[in-house]
Length: 177
Image (tube, rainbow, N blue to C red; front, side, top):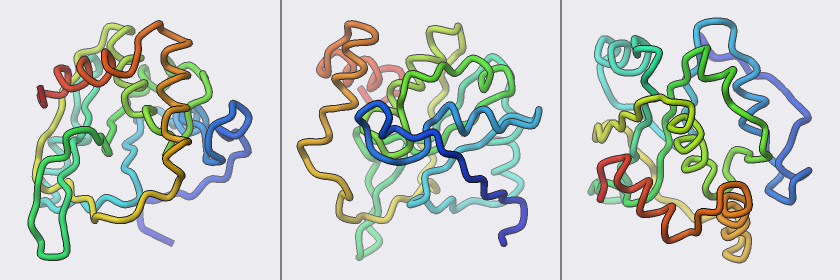
């Protein structure tokens, strides 16, 4: 057991939509108990003082959707801001309710872009943190290269936006372009 962490099983999976067999994002946001949720990918280490963490990730205005851009760290402890990945997400209770179940699941490529798009279209301001304390340990990708395009294709089908347009848009929204 981990203090303040609750492990919950849910059978709603991306596999039902042809995506990877991990829990759907909507299944996670449905678990909100009224305080909102903070979703941090499991390969991320948050390196910051607890008081700064509280102010940045807990006390967030309800009209703001805050995300954290990861810093990649190699074996020599060199860090660089990742050009694409987004690995920390702060949902208010209202935002949890607004998430639609379109099939995206944890680890599916583009789910992070999709959730930013979804919050933007609901009228929320996107704030991206580039805090170097959001550390990602470099590792092998756990899914085949061919499966990476599935998330982009789902996004294109849902919204008519292609991969190049989406990558550019999210880069601008998160302050990386």
